[in-house]
Image (cartoon, rainbow, N blue to C red; front, side, top):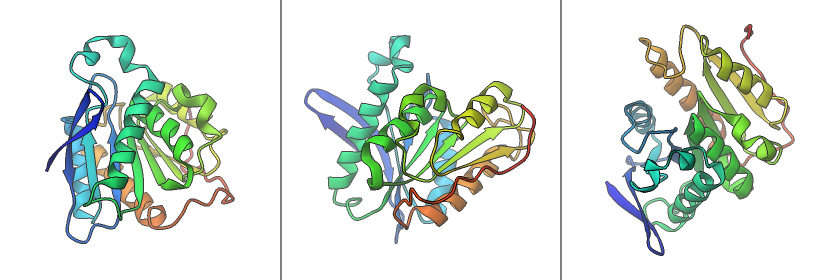
Length: 223
């Protein structure tokens, strides 16, 4: 379903899918230079739909804004747009009853963490794919939602940044996908991301965040 998220003169187009009996809604925050048409996010969203989760993919920037590269890395701006979509979802008839979660990729992961810090218990879980949590560093300690960081094994720089983020997040798990690069283009790697996201949302989306839970960091690796 095509939807439009409005705020004053601002309109952000989106794609909303609500499967029968949906158990929660996952809002996607795409990465730098991407949009709601990101083929990787669409593939993950389709797998989440089959697992019983509703999904909302939308543009964080207008077409003219996306031409200015500084906007692509303006995490407070991207977060405000994600927050706008979150408030929209809370009041939209088909999604208002669903618990909410975020899936962020690249710079969108930083926006997801920034907004999760703002919304607190309203956001039940966060998954970051190849994310840049360092861009939201001053907000990381404020994130109460259980957070899954998924990084490709050969994406060494981003892997190091995510490992550092585990020292700031209250409740997180770091999963490294073997043989995967930053874009998870290698055969089988993106489905592996989706399976990890489904596992995380199955575990955490249906229960309120528990900030007192211990931190978890999985998968041994060398940066």
